[in-house]
Length: 51
Image 1 (cartoon, rainbow, N blue to C red):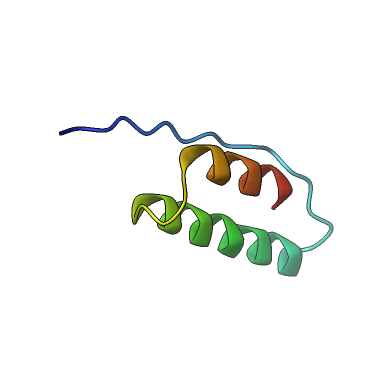
Image 2: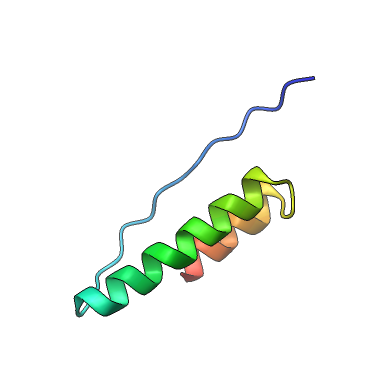
């Protein structure tokens, strides 16, 4: 069985490199959770919007 997953990117503004790295890390964690089936696509989209 195949499941199609679409990844959305949301542009954000960062004040400095530290914040940018932190946000990048959060996005990576969210996407890894999605890839591992730990969260749904809808949950991932909501979390990415908050990140």
